[in-house]
Length: 393
Ligand SMILES: Cc1ncc(COP(=O)(O)O)c(C=O)c1O
Figure 1 (tube, helix red, strand yellow):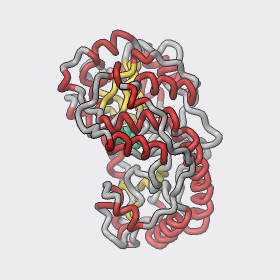
Figure 2 (cartoon, protein in one colour):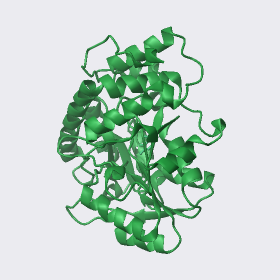
Figure 3 (cartoon, protein in one colour):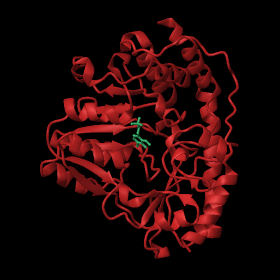
């Protein structure tokens, strides 16, 4: 299996966001493919970036080898070791690679944790939430308990621990954490996470921590893996992937990091059909990303940090009346469009030529919000916010 483990030949670490709308449409992925010209896509979480060269090389090598069959078992791919090494190097979390289980994508990993590791019962979802977090629960036969983030003026939003405590005291058995958070762009600090842990332990409940955005923490913040905290291993399942940071979600490779050996054994004992989703191309891409893609990722983070600053300037110029979150991670910005008093923020944006994500999809009561994707070029972001300025006047 060592051919999957070779170091790719390409060494350029530059990241290139200088792509035309036509270039982006030619990739035929959902963000631009279903956004008809001349509309500009600023919705789903895809980056407008040329592929990371070392990842591209690894995929091209895998294509040349004809790696089009099923992925071999985790013990033969190198994925658990590469995941553990990345977690240790990037976040200081020493993960036992025996606890890493490959899966097709993060949401199928969340589904595995729900179906096979969590007790039946309602699931707490802090809202606004990445929409599939709400959508997956009925598929798992569970109901959602949406819990809004607390928000006070000039302070970042926080997990509402009292509401979570209350819901756990009234039958909820699982907390679905998204850390860093989409769509709020929050990075949770260790104190807040340990306070959550104490509430969860008090009720003997569980946490599924979706950490797909953890490599996308921007300057000034630091990701704390929830499962790295003391006294969490018995109740935590972490799900992560290289797919957001290296922009490869279509290659299908994510990783469940079980909190303990018993949970890992449960996941490994499932019938093959329950979890056969990693693709060999995704495994090859992920190995390259985790092992050799760090310098390229660091350049992406520098670009996104500049985009964050540019957005501040553009918002001050065009949309000074709208509150928005200053992101600590991700490239997704949550905007409160309510002061604009438009009937539908998405339709108003569309009429101005811009596709954004509808706040309504992120939970009940968020109809007046929109999510903006700033993972693009400075030039395109400038065009986008100028157009939104006329839409949301
Ligand atoms: C927080 C979060 N979780 C999960 C996903 C989806 O991941 P996947 O495509 O690997 O299921 C996304 C995609 O944007 C996301 O933002």
